[in-house]
Length: 118
Image 1: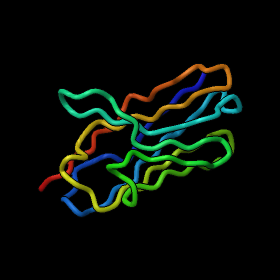
Image 2 (image 1 turned 120 degrees about the horizontal axis):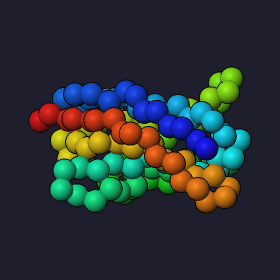
Image 3 (image 1 turned 135 degrees about the vertical axis):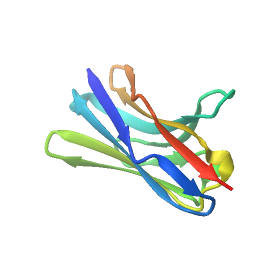
Image 4 (image 1 turned 180 degrees about the horizontal axis):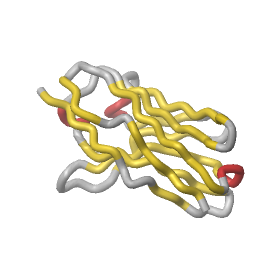
């Protein structure tokens, strides 16, 4: 099993920056793809950015050029980051970390709130 814990959310003014992190523990050697999703009130959860084990990335059109996803290892923990720049109020949502294993099992974190004020 894989456990995911997000951190780094908060309140920021429009145009500001935040860096989200997700710490993955447990069976991290089985993890292939990882990603960040977000869910705004009254809306469906949507993919924000994803990264493969090989480092290939893809982004939602709405965040291209503003967000950067990355991953790195430290000791027995795998970290996923999301650098968010030039934030807009419409980016306000709960951001979730997601990991997929090679057996197609998906794990989710509990989420971290990002609020962008205008």
